[in-house]
Image (tube, rainbow, N blue to C red; front, side):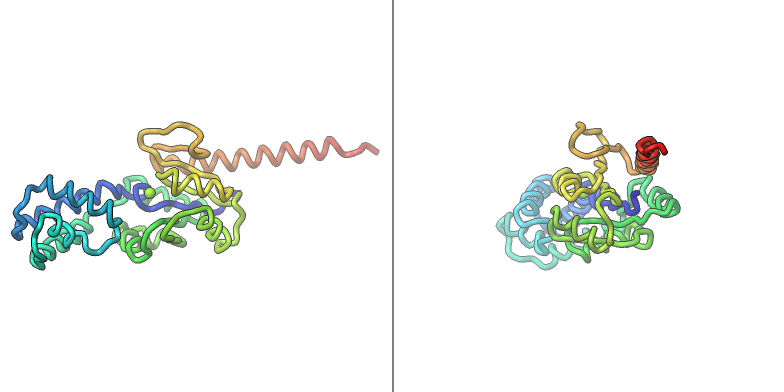
Length: 237
Ligand SMILES: [Mg+2]
């Protein structure tokens, strides 16, 4: 029986990519206003490359951007970028059906948890801003998602893989390693993906309760069949 539903955070509970683009474009426009003498689109392109090179959690993206344009360190321009980025952070929202689905699952008796890749404080920062921090029962964060990570979650929750479902948007970090740990997987894919990359796929989080209902029915049918088989096999006296 499924007891826990694990959710990835970025691009599963909220549109992380769209937010990141918005925040970075806002940062660049404020940096230009503060004196960065470059074209906004060109700066955005360069910033993308810097993030790709150093990773999203590198703390000096804006300093690196100035360097890319051959400029000396300029604290005013860097500060403008940081302020703009933090301002943009206040505008993050969950996908529309996320809060009510999580609350519905809780009411149905499921434990709802997050299983995320990144830096723990940053992931909590997002959950608090999204208003989801008090809805989730537990939050698990790892620097790198792997089969081992999903197994460690099972250990911490004291559950078997058959009792857990993992919901995420990424095959490599969500459905594949969780599936390898024996967990049932649901891929969130707004465009709809091919079969075989997860046990189930949904276009939005709102479809998940229906899948869990289906799993419950499947399990009951199986149990009934097993009982029937046992009864039929009983030697007659
Ligand atoms: Mg994700």
